[in-house]
Every structure is written in C-alpha cells, then in structure tokens.
Image (cartoon, rainbow, N blue to C red; front, side, top):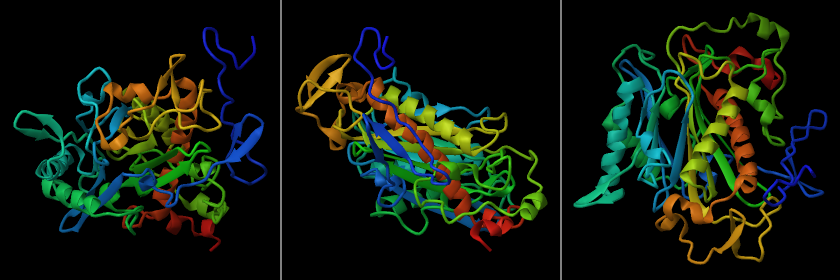
Length: 416
C-alpha cells in the first residue's frame, strides 16, 4: 500500500517536514513538491490570533510578588479544551471543557499566581464579564464561563498569603478589555509570571506565533514556573530556542563554558507549575482543542526538562476563535470536491451559513472543523510555538534575589 493511502479513506496530504541547514533554524513546510516557509505573526504573540486580548496585573512589594493574566475571547466566545499533565494542578472549570459536557464556548481564561488561593482572581473577571452582559445565557441573566489555572508562587514576595484576589483579576480584565494590541508587558516577569521561577532562574510570561502556509495562525502564551531546567543538558543554551523561526533567536550565542560550569542549577524546594494557552483562528471542536493542548505539552517538554513532575501542575488550554471555517484552502487542506465545501468524514458539506466567532457555534463547531489530516499542521505548530514561548519568557524575565535572570547568569549568550 502506498504510504499516503489509508484503508477506507482518502490519501493523506504530505506531512510537515522541518529541515535545518547548518545553523539555519528556518522552518520549511513541504506541500507537495513545493517548500513553503512559515513566518511569525505581526507581533509574534498570542494576539496575532485575531480577536484575542491579553491583560496583566501584578503586585510587588509589601509581601507581594505575584500577579494575574487574563485572555479575553472575541465576541461570541471561543471553543476551548484543556490538558492537565502535572501531578499538582490548581484549576477551575476544566470539567466543563470535556466534549461530553454542555458548554460550547468560554469567555475568558485566567492564568494566575497564588496557588489555589489565586483561583479567586477568576471571580473578579467573572464579575466584569457579567456586568458587561457576557456569559452563558440562563433564565434571569448570564453566567460567564472562566476556566483558570494557577502556578505556585506562595511566599516569593515575603508573605505567604499575599496572593491574587478578585480585585487583581478585575484589574487584569480591565487591562485586556482596553488593549488594542501588544504592549510593553507582553513578556517577562509580569502578570501571572511576576513571581515565577524556572530551574532556579527567574521565570515569567512568554509568547510566540506562527502563520501557516494556509494562512491559519497558531500562537501560544506560557507562564514558566518549572521545577525542571530550561537549559540544554549539554550547555547553557535555552532548549526552546532550537525551535525558533528565522531571525528569532539568531542574536543568541552558546554561553561560555565558564558560565555554564559556574551555574549550580537548582534543587526541588517547593511546588512549581508551568501553565499556558495555545490558540488558533481555525475552527476546532472541543475535542480538537483538547488535542491541541495535549500536543502543546510536547512543546513544553522539549523546552523544560523534566516536565509534568510530582511537584508541577502543568496545565495548557487549547483555544479556537472559529474565525476561519475549515477547510481554509491551502497546501495541506484535504482536497474538496469543489470550492466552498468542507469534508466531513469523507463527505462534502457546504460552508454556507457559517457564523464564525461573532455568532453561536454549531454543536462542538463540528460542521466546519477539520479532519485528522487538516489538523496535523496546526498540532505540529502548537508544539513549536509553545517551546518558543517558553524561551521568550526566560529571555525577558527580570532577575531578583534568589532568582537571577538568564541574561545575568549567561551574559555571553548576548556576546558580552
């Protein structure tokens, strides 16, 4: 049997092929016989997925070193799934994301410090959404759907119970609601990453994006607070930089041997956790969003070693704004009988009447969602963008007592 032919179904499209020529980290996607380079979005951040907005709020001083980050959905909400891999998670509303359960769209995602205490930050976001009339409609009003996940940063500002609360969540919501694009606080020791530590180094928030040859955008945001190391085991290079796009990390060098030898690393001292989101504008079902989150964990594990430990609560949300119906015609889409049709289990169906992000989703968004072949490139990109987001978090983090920044420990990586 030909390798691209499946029993009982059509031939699969050619897979994504990543090639590296010498030290060139370029990503080349093979569509038929024509190589196509993928590129970062306009801002190389989560907001390259049109309609998503991000806001951060933090408290530093008077015993605090923590914060909250909010990802707001476009009008009409977004489809979401989740994958929890760590053994010590702190989450809210994740059961609603099971494809068997009722709610099809969420209205915000909250990423926050404060361990389980910090989940109260989601209440402030929920209040803001309810005041705006945004939520799941029920008799008498709406119930905003706000899943959340936490990192463990208790006591990193000096006071154990100095944690995010509803007011900090509302502040992060306000920052997102009035955001019209990326701001200076996109990456680094801000929001949920304010008190983050990763392998003994200062952690933080990082983000990255990619535009596939089809025009579909995939982006990620990571809050890096891992017990594991973010460094390549053979030296001081950040593991996540290996998945960079052309020019993204080209300014970095391999750190000097003396700096690598002088860095003692870190031992397990408390609970940790890396959390984040991976998003696309392609229409996905809840189950497919869950799969996207699961494959993004591969990106986490490429950039952090070890991952998913007993003292991490690693959790990633997969999001779809449903702005693009499937297939969004491109080199990796399944062949359709004619333009304007979608393939549903081998049959064709019209895209007429698709309402996208601004309107209600079909049940599970299934009428316009991709099959296994069409989803492949999105999943592959989801893993890579998460690895890159982890690297950007470490590069942008600000050092402090007990948690030096990567740039301070390995200045030769910048040629200094």
